[in-house]
Image (cartoon, rainbow, N blue to C red; front, side):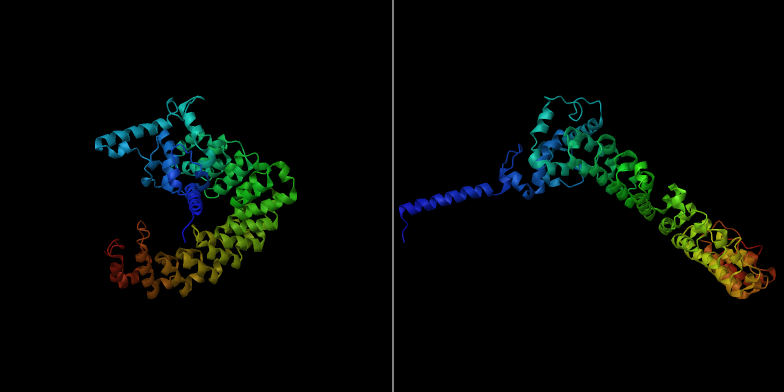
Amino acid sequence: MKRSLQDTASHNKNKKNKSDQNATTGPVIISLDIHHKSKLLPIRIQDVPQALKIEMIMKPIFETFHLKPSHFHHDVENSNIENSDNENSDSDEQDESNQEDETSDSDLEDESDEENPMKKHSKNSPFLNFRNSLNWKRDEKFIIQEILKLKDENKLIRIAKVLNLWENKQFVLKAVENWKLIYWIFENIPEDRDLILKALETSKSYNGTEEILKWSAIARNDKEILMKAAQYDGIAVRFPSQDLRNDKKWFREFVLQCVKTKGTVLEYLSEEFNRDEEIVMKAVKQNGISLEFASHELRNHREIVMKALQSNGMAFEYASIELQNEKEIVLQTLNSYRYYSGSVIDIIRGSFCSNDRDVMFEAVKQEGMALEYASLILKNDRDLVLRAVQQDGNAIQFASDELKRDRVIILEAIKSDAKNRTKRPSFKILAFEFIPKEVQSEFIEIARALYKDVFKVGGWW
């Protein structure tokens, strides 16, 4: 069926309107321009490729501040932000360009450079006009995102000053995620509650909570901020204002959170809290060394001391004398102490438990030389002495005269001592020298093979 002239005109008109509509909603790329005048971009900026956004939005900023791709944390190799003149120049011209870039970098950091746009600029300066020409309503989020990728914090701070970004709360809250900027921000930006909370969240990765609370008067008077700080670092217990400390119920909950995070802050608390069983228990559970700051009564509290030892065997030093001589306490200490630097001998020396076979067996398993502090009866215990010399051959010197002649014990002592030479090469005395001379001749060849002639034994080598 043939269309009428009127139908054809109507069809063409509809087609033209549809074409115009498609042109309005078509690809954003064709609408982009360096002056940011596109009416479509505010709607579709998130759909624009990253390289194109950098080219159209960030390139003027890069060029104004003499920045290069290497100054940023992302790869902009394909964004064509370098001058085309540099790309087409020969090697000599490229070297010259690099020198100019280096000069620009130094100028960026030179406070006395008056031509640097980040320094003095009048209200009518071209740079101010450039800044005002940026389409902040449309591009603010993207510009902030890219500026924060600068590797050099000093450049970032100065560029943000000129762009008035430090007056932009969104930018500041993002910037404070970089812990290297936190100190500058707190010294130069007015205090803000949201800023403090964000900074505290950042500080947990580098233990900066204490510094933030020192700077912030707002934080020291805000219960929510302090409780959040306590979750990151118990040192927050030092900073509540007196008014908040007077709120006994809240302050106790706050202290409990602090010692749960860092037990040793018990040191900063008053006697009221140092004798509080619940608070001290949480503190030693987090770090057994916190027992040092507990009251005298609680250092004699068996359950608290056991919990402290389970956390850190070195807490044994702060237990009461009475508990230091309990078998179960000493065994728990030896089981925990192996994970920390120190000598088992410090635990055994002077302890009444040195007469206990179970205690001494655990001790010599970790440090054979602890045999020195065993009772005379235990020094004649073959299994105990054998275990001691297997850990450290030199422990044979503390065995009874009878066991010093035991062939199995002698052989184990020499083997162990030869093996340990690599761990302590400066230790010159050999286990062989503690063997009675009347039996040494039986083991000279074995000793020579095991020691590999590294050391001379007596006068037999």
